[in-house]
Length: 463
Figure 1 (cartoon, one colour):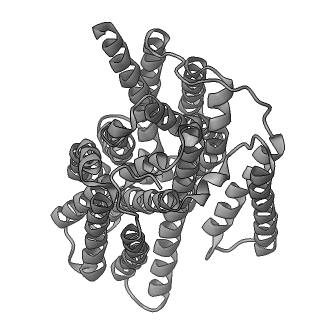
Figure 2: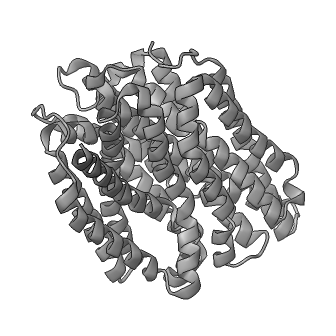
Figure 3: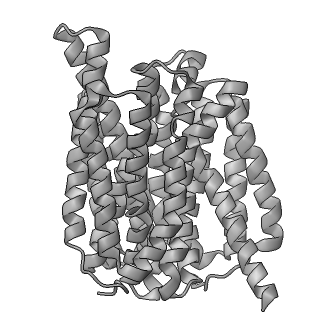
């Protein structure tokens, strides 16, 4: 018995170690933007594709994850994902130009896009329903905390070495995880071999086209091409959705969306994720551009929020198991909304200490929403659909997260320019840009609060 418990412990520990490291890579470059802009002599709008492009590729890979789980033994799949991530990281380290670096980021994103839904599906499958809240609290600690820790790690590394040092850290850790996986990871998922629908995979690429056009709003460019791309992308996504309902074995089982509590869970985990990722991307820029601190300080300023998120994630899972999901997620949305409201009202009076407190408030609220929503969604579905349900939740979360980053960057840039053109000085214009971001995302999170009130209040969360 003790041997099985030890095997389970090391299985989960190694699985989460790999996921944690890959999740750090998603947000770690935000602190390094100014450094990379100088290194490659490129504007922020181009450099941010190292993050936005990363998330877009993740979105395309996530719907493929359930099929991979059903057709490839999990141990082989996990090892393959680690190798792809290592290869991408190595390309980045050797990259002579930005295009090659972006290629490496694409490979990293492929690995992360497959792993994120897969590890959650595995965790949910091997855990009894009555304990899923606690287990997914730990999973939330990995995903949410790693996202918050990314800029912190980046700030520390940039203090003592170059930006390449950050990817050396990733390469070393993932290589160690790969070695450990050879002895600890088991193939725990039941296989059900099937053919893959390549048309669905091709059509899913429409996600990238739509989000690319969103990112181009307000920028000078060939809008004839952009509108054509948007039209083609929307048609591709429409074909993708239609095929998923027509196929006997769809790439992604969208029929899970017929469950009301599950639909609310999808939206709530995405909305809370938007709040988290915008904080981890926009706040370091605010610290450096408005408050004038160094990349190291801007990274370290995210530590309190990351600590709060890390402490609360396992606790909120237990609270959800005990008191029900609705109360826990309502509390979380109230915290998130309070943080954005204070930012929107007092943007002109912020200092580093206050911003750190508000970041902790928003990230703490995220701990009460994101992973409890994932668990709620899983509990609302039969076990055989958990992998598909998790993939849908994770895909929507990443799509809206990518959109959130693109919209935040878009609002910040365009409002700042507009105010500057109206005669405001650079400092006032930039502050106005950030205030506009805060107001928009307050509205988004208020929508999430309304959705939380609509949840069906049941501890088991079955509908």
